[in-house]
Length: 329
Image (cartoon, rainbow, N blue to C red; front, side, top):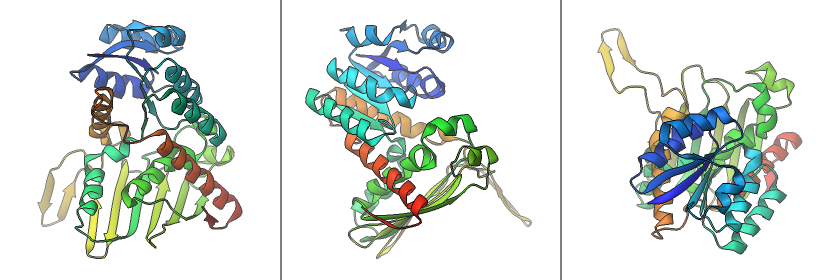
């Protein structure tokens, strides 16, 4: 049984990570660390775990590994502290919003030779993973184009957007990682355009809420990402991969699978409303993988390098947006 220290008792900590740690037969939610006492108490009372400070958790020999789901600006420091303490690390994306800080952090991890897993949960979605697996099996031949649609049901508060790093670093970063994962190549160029048409608050803080990104790969294949902070009908998450022999598509997961057919047409449920519902299976799958890492049965499938590459693409997309030019990578 592995004792896990959970950093972050916010929404994802409470609804996703605490549950997955507690329900896995090989992991125990040993402690919770969060500066907001009310949130920490909720998890401690529910699971009977300790409340610790950062220092206590890092120095506690009973802590076998850490899961970092705290505020983004704490990730790099906590990763470094855990690495120096010799504790394997599961960290939600991103490592940090500044590339230089990411490089500094990953250098510490490399020096300490501690496993680091970055939580790009969409790779672990059963539907998207099947697209990648079936491409590898040659079912559609050589990949030629990838379309990624990612739309939130409604825009986040402007206060969140101000500290999130912006659309590309906060939202599209998942899609940059997905494109690398599905295509199996590093893009050689990127072009981005965007608008602020959904939410005046987002526009006021200098960000965009609607974007298209096009990437080219060494093989000649291309990927297009369509983002919006508003769908109006649920969490819109789809991919389409076209190849020389056919196409693979992964559609939305719906609130239920029942369809009503009458002479008037067909009615069926909307997509799952938000990421917590849409990617429930993905979060469980990535935690299962991290336990395999703890058991010495695997190395992290999404590493610090993956985190750095996704941030690099986000930075270059922003450069393209600001200059209006295609950026060579």
